[in-house]
Length: 238
Image (cartoon, rainbow, N blue to C red; front, side):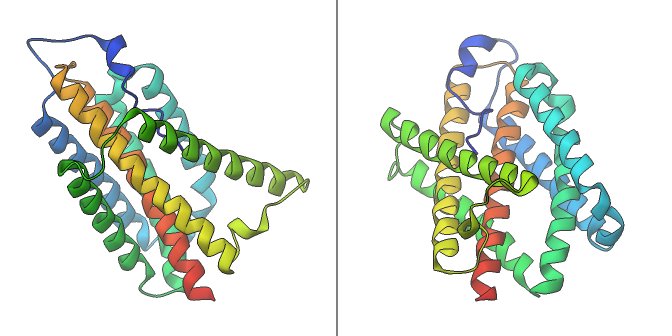
């Protein structure tokens, strides 16, 4: 999905704080904290995945509500983003454990690829090989929105029995190609995340925006990890 947390326009609404402003080091530190909480939470629930499975939907719903609050009330991000990270870690831990039971070794592969893609995209951004131009941003946002629409239609159709889009979940060539496309778009969203962090630092946005932008980056990383996990699963099930 397109990351609603990361948009250049967010800074026009929060203003500038010349005394206690956003820094790159501060944002990096917050990002490490949130990613660390997510990983620790996932590890903690790993051995109890069967116990937590019935609570996946309530956990996901609470996480969604928290994310929505943060989007509309950015000043809550220092308090709510760690809670979000823990909840997402619980959900990811349960999901990952079940993938691992079916396909041993898949989780470490997905984790490694996720951080590998992150580092590659960071390098491409820092070296200006990929630039976050307005056309680039528009293309990524449009593609991400299309993916979100496909997922929403598929989810609605599966619940109502009205319609399903089979290839997005199947292990055939079309399913794999679709997952490759989604992984690629998720990776490109990282460029938008990096760009928005840089903009916030240059504009001297308020300090709490370090948490907000770190939260946005975490959302993208979680999405990227889950899509890589699904891609690997499709490839190994063939």
